[in-house]
Amino acid sequence: MKLRRLLALTVAVPAALAIAAVPATATGTDSTPSAPAAQGTIKVSPLYGPADATGKATVRASVPCGPDATAFRFVVRSPGANERVFGGSFLGTPLPADKVADTSIVAQRALFPVGSAAQEGVAHKLVAQCYTTDAKGVLTITEPASVDLRVNNGVWTSLSPEARALPTKIGALRFGLVLFRGFAPGEHVDGAVVAADGTSTPVSLQPQIAPDGTWGGALLTLPATVADGSYSLVLSGTNSHATSSVAIALDSSRLWW
Figure (cartoon, rainbow, N blue to C red):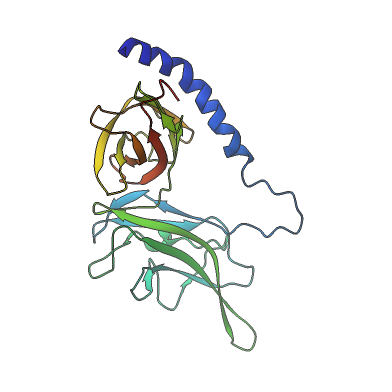
């Protein structure tokens, strides 16, 4: 049985990765001239770190401020907490020549310093702000880029991984394929199935094929203790603790799907 599973993985994973790549390249291509430009993102370096004063990082917007902007700052917005300035002056830091907001000019800073609201399970938004002052001294603040930060098990991450299951309904053989991307380069991916009542059961994701920046895959094997029913398959990066989930079901009345 193990040999057959490995052979199935060898044949199916490359094909599944090719299938997964098709919608990924098609998504977001809008040729309509009137379509609004997508909001910029923010690159956080490193991609994850401790959610305390030691978890320092630099951040850089993916798009420049306007040509008349003279200063920038980044702010972190956390649910139920006051907005907090990150990596620069409260009144704004002068923009470099390329007009891109970038905290590397003021060195690394803690994303969640002592006293900040590093709640787990919620989205903290990191926002780039650009300052423009007109001839009359009126200040205009624009926000061209942002990224969500999440805190899991005491680790913050800017990663937003994706996961897919093939098939989504698993039969009596209790195995299928899982595809994923967006985790930290080179990290191992753990899996668990979570029932509606919150009960979590670890599952096997072996062997793993995880190329950097593209779709990776693994053979999913459900243990005998998992009963028929609907579940969330939750994937998490061992180091980054970034998570992604996909709905699956176990139906033992079917052999495969």
